[in-house]
Structure formats: C-alpha cells, structure tokens
Length: 191
Image 1 (cartoon, one colour):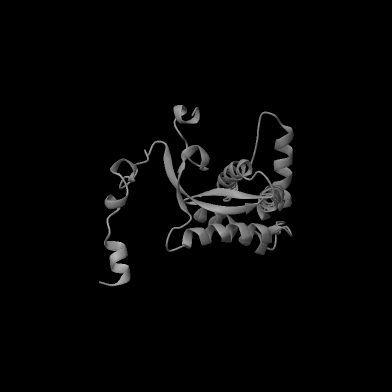
Image 2 (image 1 turned 45 degrees about the horizontal axis):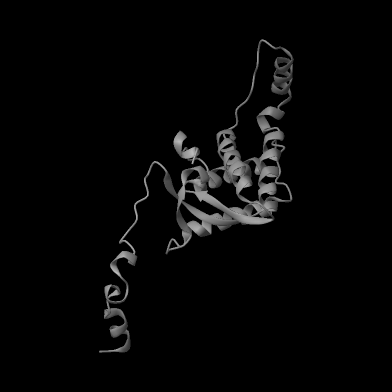
C-alpha cells in the first residue's frame, strides 16, 4: 500500500468523535439565501461607475439633440399639464446598475472592499456598455466616455473573471439582504 493510500484510507470516525464530525452537507433555505460572486472593488471604481451613469443621463441622445424635437420638449417642460419625456433603450439598465451601485456602496467601507456580484450582472453590464458604445460612435449623439471609464472596465472585468472561474471558487452562499436585486422576506430583513 502506498503512502497516500494509507493516508486516505483511514476513516475520520477513527480519530474524531461522532459528535464533532461535520455533517455531510448543510441546507440553506432558498427564501433567505442565494448565490453570488465575491469580487474586490475599489471606491474609485464605484465613483467611476457613478460618473459614467451621470454622463449617460445628462448627455442628450441624437434624437434629443434634434433642434425641432428639442424645442417641443423644452416647451412641454414649462407646461405643467403636459410632459414629454423620451425614454432611451438604456434607461431600464441604468436603474438596474444604480441599484447595484447603491448596494455596493454600502459594502465597500474603505478604499477597497468585497462586493457581492449577483448572477445576471454580467448580462446587464454587457448590454449597458454596448448601448453606450453605440451612443459614443453615433455622430449626432453628444455622449462620450468619461476619462474614468477605464476603472469601470476594470471592475466589470473583475466581475466577469469571477464568474468565469471553472472551479467557482468565488461563488458563495450569501444572505439575500446582502445581494443586489434580491428581495429578502420582511422577517429576514429584521434579523
């Protein structure tokens, strides 16, 4: 018998009392827990993401920059009875990313911390960043990426890398109150 065979053939029951042996598995209730990826984040990366969202929201789209339409929108903004507001295709994504940002802001105490990257965040970021690239490439659109966009790229790349790990070493079971986009039950929030 080889050295490793003897090492692995000995039973833990021989050396550890039954009361101290770990259970075969632990069950986490679905109502309280879900899985998310642990990702390192810097405060400056979160600020850069916030700046990117602001730049997107304050830069007129090509359609809004059209003089005739801009005039109508301006007139309707002064009239309290009517309101014309253009909704961009990226607006729903902005709301989702803002929710992530608000949650992550609480998780990063100092200059660097760990955030919980929810499943699905990769798709949201891919769609939103593609939308911004299309805007930046459009001739009549006034959007351009801020200088800090590279920090956003770094944060998103780190999140995608955590998800791409073959061994899922960064995947953890986390209480829903700590994961963005998750809604714990009312009693779970009080715990």
